[in-house]
Image (cartoon, rainbow, N blue to C red; front, side, top):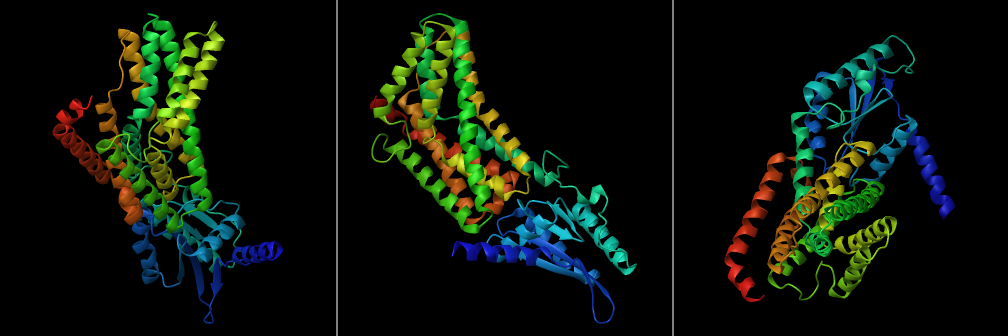
Length: 418
């Protein structure tokens, strides 16, 4: 069975790789084939769609093959095989292939669209002259336009803004705050700013690296699965579930299922933190700090797992190269560690001892829960909306407003429970 499947895939790839770029009809007219690979969940694909579909109106000699890849596995296989035949990788949509040239991304009709029309015209002229279709177009026509790494269109600014918004909210992680504040509280009694800065800095750096590895794992999973619609729906449903659990924690903290550091695991964190204080030399102290950060981050992943999942899925739905996706991950994690670094800075300056109160932790849970619920609903129902800057602003405004109202009307109740 396995050999038969492998043979079928090999034959399918060979067939797809033989796609014609031009052909001559019965009347001797040259026809140029344009392959348009797109996804229903890709906002830039939807922007490009009307332009691409209208090309034959002015250029009837162009044959447009509009191939949706998120729901049609045959089209996805065709995309992969055709890209491989050109020495390329099918890793993003929208992708336009014509005359042996593959271009990924869409800025606007005036830029990407105009360049495409020029390439089609040149291809037809070349075919009518009898020249073999072996030459490649100018580098300008073959470039990939990617936000931040290439030409950034006005509508491409939404992904960086969304990164800042989501990473900023993810950064207010009650689990991470709990561990770091406890560690710094112990160090404050030693009255050593140097030790506090060194240990706190190592903890924050290790936490950022761990989170990057975790998000990279999510990204690789989604990249392997591709742009299939059910994967996006599943990610949205998981985010909805995580959001509802965090909202539940605000109203019924410590009851039932919770995405928090289990009480049974906190003694292990306390023990590891005290090992740092008892370390006899600098290497031992740094090693103990790294081990604490690694152990703590495994527990912390439960607190905000929804945010990395939503964000990495959004990256795979965007027309980015693998390198650009990892660059965005690095940018996300830089934003993520800023609040932790700020806490270390304040403690070093003041030698203070501060713990995260239950009320503050519950409010952070509510904020992240509402945001996760919003993101999950959009990812499941209308993922294309996540590419708009105004949507990011609206989501944050709603989450902050609801959290503020909840904190205001439940303040006395929470205080009475202390």
